[in-house]
Length: 127
Image 1 (cartoon, rainbow, N blue to C red):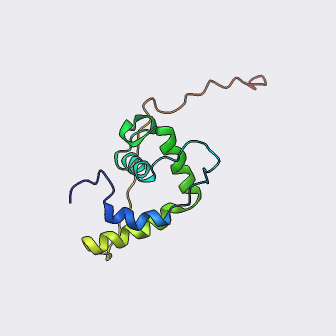
Image 2 (cartoon, helix red, strand yellow; image 1 turned 135 degrees about the vertical axis):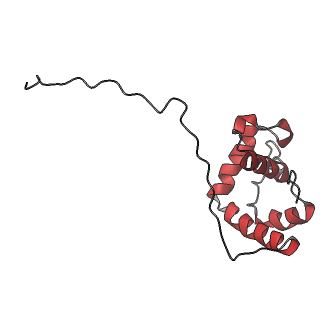
Image 3 (cartoon, rainbow, N blue to C red; image 1 turned 45 degrees about the horizontal axis):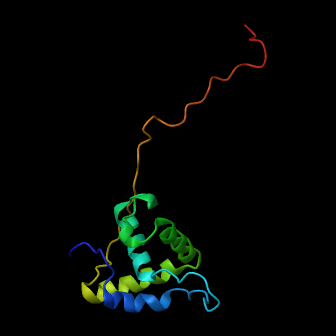
């Protein structure tokens, strides 16, 4: 399976109805950013582990992508998207759920953590 760079049309058609509605802009204001483009940007960050500020401009301003990410996180959109993606993957490739694996990222602190100053005694030494 090749690496996913853009959300496939058939998957997006299933995901789009799960997103919260955009605010009414009939009285003016900037038009809302393209949710699909922003989702691809979120997926890029999650896939690469890059910082938000390092996002390629093809996904839009990183601040807009991050703001929409927080909005969707707070609205619990990702739980619904995760379930939809599992169904999509199951239909396309099949899943073997007889085992599970946890994964994590561990980063060494480059300087061994924050150094603390020597604590000076507040009373004379009893020696």
